[in-house]
Length: 185
Image (cartoon, rainbow, N blue to C red; front, side, top):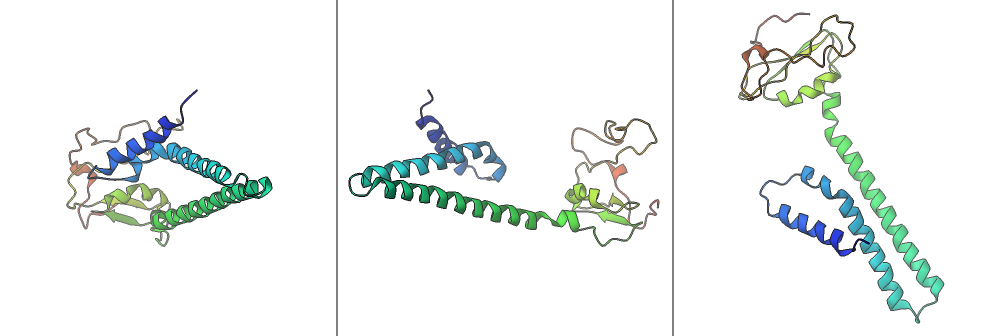
């Protein structure tokens, strides 16, 4: 049988390590999400045991049981409301990449410079429009173009390495276009 203290202690150990890190991101916390849920459930059950222990002999059993169930239900409803609010906040805060190209009339060319990291949102660019890169302060490797051949293979564009790629994150000038350069329609 697994002791209850080990999972409970491990969350505090993890939090203490990452609290002292200078660079904090939520991606370091997803590893312990299940432990956070476990810790919360243990806290609720510990509260129920405490209420039961304090109230025995003073209150009827039905009142104790009702109080404990009300605390459990209240905690669940509160957590559900906070979780829903967080989901909606994330959707609202990060929806820009899905709607940024909504009002572009095709065919169009969208030039990306310092905001090259928005490239994944280029999947939302209207058909017959394209994203290209112009020179900016960023001097690393920019995303390449998928192969657009007429192969009969259903995944022909995804398994080929785009031209001009390297594994040193070095700038590749063939991924850039110069301002004023005519782009295919």
